[in-house]
Length: 427
Image (cartoon, rainbow, N blue to C red; front, side, top):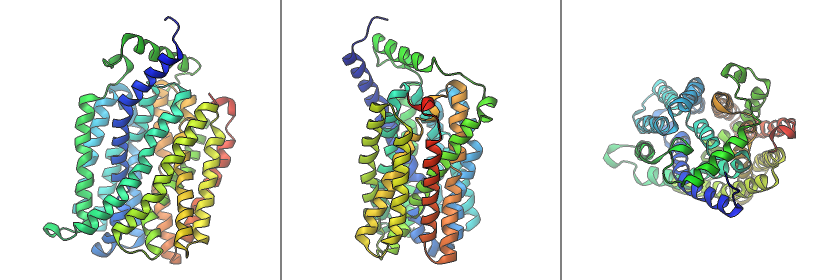
């Protein structure tokens, strides 16, 4: 291939990003909203259905048991059949199940529906992380993954006020509770987006008719060069690798903080003395809005400097500091929200940059299995974190102990991140 000018390369990746990322970002916003809107439903479900804090914590977390069991096979299937069909299948099935959450009437049915929702969604996030490795080389994936994962923060910015509005304004319409309307109205967009994915998403560079021949050649050459130093290990080798298990443990530590905040932020804000669901939703958007800015800024720095470990560890430590300060300042709404904003921004910033660590040394089918295993084991924190916080809250009458637990987990994650050899991941 003839020598490529930097301006042509930059224009090609800009074109690629505008084609792929808006759709993937919208899909993730909807996906994450459907995963955690149960935290808003809790504000009404507990009294309506007579659930205890432990029942809610277990139900919120059991999602991740289904997620864990089906994650690895789902990602391997995606690698073999293509992202277009498989991502669409995931979105349509989870959208229908998320909407069906409105019919929950008992604790066993709550557990069952959350488990099925997790099984349906399994493979979406690691599938997209794997999908991005087909298009972007390692030194570009920090910023791209951060753009994708701002979906978490944007789901908080959009979803908090939206969930609060639906629960506040739709309560009693057609005889349904506000939380029932919330599940229905926030679940159906996933089904529609699944149909959009089928229509416009391309599996690989070679399938992208909207690229010129020169652009396809450039992207293909960059991916080939990026993969040249990697070994396409077998699934068994990857799943038994100490390095991959270390990555899973690091991700578990960071996810403990993420899901603690995601599921309990509305409850924490309510404990400050704010009762109206809409007002809680509007206030919960503040930490997520700040997180979007921090995520994009730090990821840009990581890609420019080609440094990963400290860009992951420092936000994790800041997230831990924010959680601790939220406890110390819990009786002052302004300072408590500032602390929660620091915690949320720090925690969310660790996550996209974390994925630049394992994808720096995984490729092919091994990457499909490894990314899925890291994500599935790490996301078991989605079960243990809300359950532990719920248990501690019921035992102590406060979320303070849960905040301490999550802060400790983030500190451990940061220390483990710094134990990873720089030569392995700084590319």
